[in-house]
Image (tube, rainbow, N blue to C red; front, top):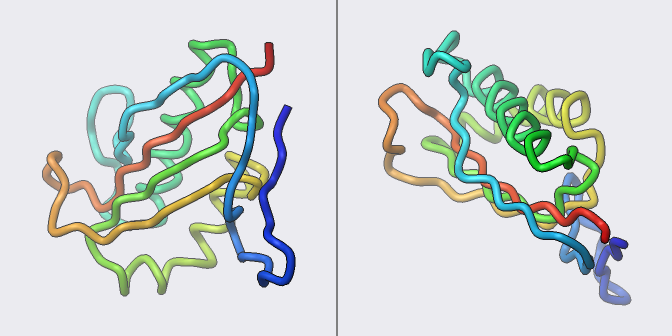
Length: 131
């Protein structure tokens, strides 16, 4: 059970939901960076790292019997706001291909750096699997 929370009169946000109400088993995914299963960055491109980080989120969800359709919240940490905004079309494409829906409460935060050298993005997720 998922309900998108959209207050009356508010403009509909692009690429995320203002809020989500859900009921079920909670699954928390730690911050995923854009490296592969051997912890190697295959690209220094932000959009490519985001694509890999999203795939990593989905891989962790799978271990809980969940999928991208169960995600209710994401937080993106990026090292460069301008690079993030410039990559928005490619980020959106990767998001649609891997996650598939925008009914997610999301936040993006610019940070001075991430713990893994070479990482340009880190993505946390919370999912709710219906009972």
